[in-house]
Image 1 (cartoon, rainbow, N blue to C red):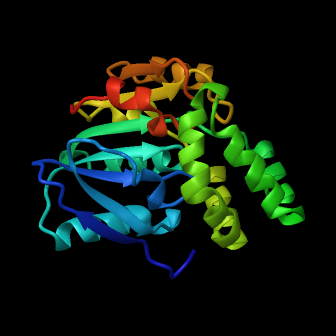
Image 2 (image 1 turned 120 degrees about the horizontal axis):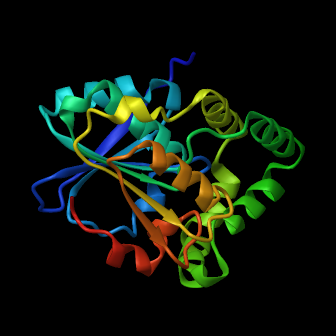
Image 3 (image 1 turned 45 degrees about the vertical axis):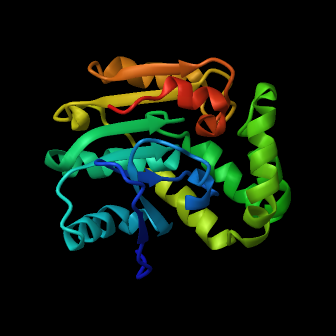
Length: 233
């Protein structure tokens, strides 16, 4: 569908295990830069959803890496599940955050129309909706470091491409049955993906661990509560 290639950056943080961090729609790898987990990181500096699985596999082969864990948030959760279902022998753990089984296509079409009408206004509201009222510290960090950059610099064509991917994306529980460890983390006050949708998906992935963070919204990993509720697999 596109000749554009996803690209990656490795960060050696002095740990033994590698975590591939996959961001959600309308963000990029910088949304994870405040994240402090006990892994080395592999970050997609350029992410094109339709090519991601192939590009990541090629990158891991080039680096001679045989085992990874995946940390997929929102759109990134679909990409993590897709990669893991195909390459399950390479996977230590899949961590899915802010996810559902499938997004409603009519809602995605409405988002496309809103973006084309007024991209800045839609994104401003979207980013605000990614945080609960109790997420004020996390939102303050996001507003200071990323809000203006994302609104100004993320291209409409990339936003539409992400929505086109989400129109087709679906997490199939049976495709994750071969994975030894799956964790689903969700914010109880998520306005983008209601908690009930994550719970419904967990009910179909019977071996998955489910962690609900009480006060957080969609960007739950930016909240201080997240580090306390997260531990290496």
